[in-house]
Image 1 (cartoon, rainbow, N blue to C red):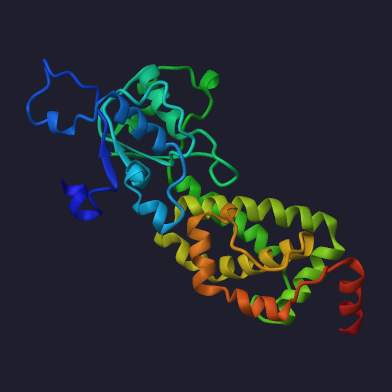
Image 2: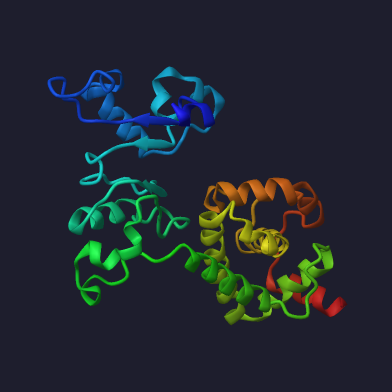
Length: 283
């Protein structure tokens, strides 16, 4: 009920194994039946509706669900790579806890390499004891949220340092200087692609963390540069905000990057080596 008031009734869904003989009366209104329960779980694993018409279709009501409320039934055998966050408020141990971590940690396209667990129970304060496994055999099953911040700061700092001497002011000239530099230096091109992918994934993971505020101007500049760079490598008639960018990065681009202006300043032609060399000679 609290989630319904805070978000909307269709955002969360209770999914339970039904036992009419033993369940209390307060649980029974949440029964879905086997068919609807399977459909709810299957729809949750897929992407949300992309159009308003698709969203309004009654057959897609489970596709609008963003939060599943479960107890035990979906912690084992639930293969949903799209799952990004688990809110944990019960005690677990050993293989059950390891399975819960595995549920949210499945990779999903290039934007999700790991998941988040918000621990309301305190399990992660003594994770190794709760898992009861040899850490050397298990490896690092989970690490504190703060490590994401450290990783983001390290990667975006390395990324920005590739462009030392180039003003990050959003101007046409600075963008061309950065493109020329990338065109002339294969090692930096490879670093740029790798580091931007890392930063993009971490940004999607951390947003809306206030920690990101100090890095937003640099990230906006890098997003615009990556759009130009991608256009150079894969010329297209129009700039499009790619699904690969992630919902939060796409929102940032819509708010702060003038795609129409970019198309006017960088019309559709192949920014090949000869073109960039001529620009460099003119400077």
